[in-house]
Length: 480
Image (cartoon, rainbow, N blue to C red; front, side, top):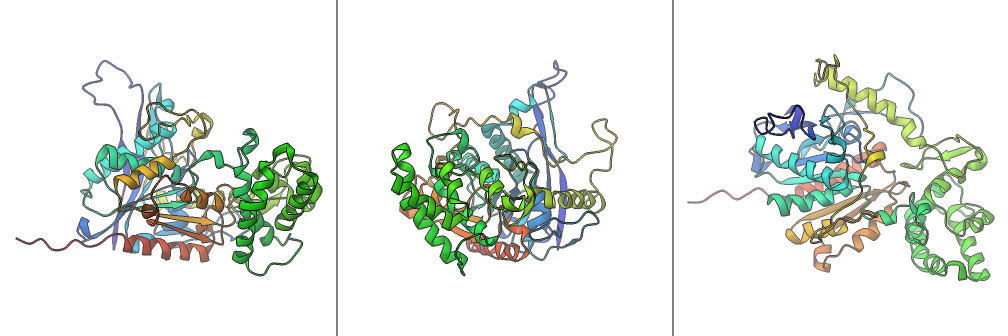
């Protein structure tokens, strides 16, 4: 039914122009795996470009966990035992509705960076988006897919990237997309619940994270009162977060004792955290503190990317959780599964390269430690050297192409990019109400990697497949 293509698209300088140089200042090759359906004309077959985030992550997670033809089986909310791992046919692959191109970020996968300025040239918000934009344009040219319905699918930091790439494709390349599909969104980093401790006076992240804290406490049965229905409970928490909790935080250190006590008690009711702890935290608990404290009496930390998970605490006296039990629970399975799949099915990675004698697939680079988060927003003269905010980029893409559709998918148990944060950001895009009708939002009873839960994976597939099917149409036959 399908054929696959693997390889790298280089961003090497022209050899003739650089004869005098032994090595260019910076260049990259970007690795991809593409799956095409045979015997279908390009205009009749959508193509979706898929990538993870980090920044500095390969696309292995979406490839082997969500939408590729094979997937690795992992435990739902506990540590997956060591190898051998089950690699099975993926009944929820998106290949039933779209060709897929899994793209590894510069410096990951089998791609490589070269040149003395290689990291500076690619490891930053804007250069990374530029590299992805160029890659997509080159790919469309190489494989003759300019007339196909086109989609972006980004997860986590990949949603940040998608906002910029969607706008750059339209504005710089003249390429309109049919849809942008977002999974576990963060677009305004002032809303980051992990970074808020270093950004005092920014209270909004606490408000937006509270419903995810409540969902986590509900899952682990840490609430003082029983709530049967999760969604009904979360609607109540969302209302409190936007009203009484917001009002209390805005009082700052002028808050009255009565308001502090009432707010702390309500936070206890919704999170299960001790009232005294909440008061000591000044009603403000960041992500790492919550992950360390919720199950602290059991010497367990909850997961960050999926708070259904838990694991032994590393340091009983620490204020924060030092690791993510969810990542520890399944990373080995993904790494083993992709290495097996790449070498034994794709037959890629076994030949000598770069003088190493073998090709190492890099699941992560150390980009995040060296990342330049400055960003030049559309229609501005200078980059902003503060918290990244790409909401103007997505808004610009939607204004360039008013037919562009956007789909946001979120997990209730995601403490890395809380679901209520994504809702808030979508509601605060600088666009008209008419354009906001182009946005669809869906939640799942899972975490950051929604697809790590099999039931949620099927729901995610069905929702995304429906979105793609409804946002492209077969062109009418040409007439003379």
